[in-house]
Image (tube, rainbow, N blue to C red):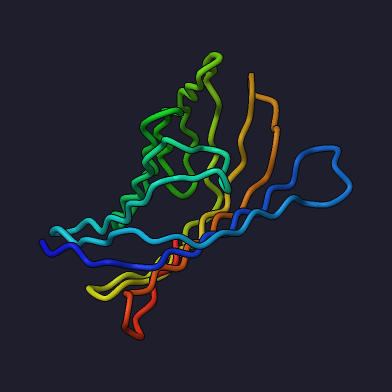
Length: 150
């Protein structure tokens, strides 16, 4: 298991029910990338840009699921499994709530040098849809030509 330095580009498109147009958040940051058996892992520190300073995010990519763990000023664990509904506790400094997560689609392609992934999902509160989302991550080794998108 060798840790590699990477550049991570992320984009989230969020369609909130009732909004005229979707919100898009894009950012780029440095982080680390590792492969261990059947799991790829991408980790980075959140910042003011993402609105989560003091939080460490780790994305674990398995053959059949993607798990996003956040620890620090915000704590959460989102488990994405295509065609499945899960829930997660969203803990923030001013309180916590449980949200539903309905994963519609996962597309991923990872190897030793990186890979790609896209996740489409719906977040609900009290079983009422709040937003429809698409998360895309692109991870590239620093100084290399390989890419990784989540």
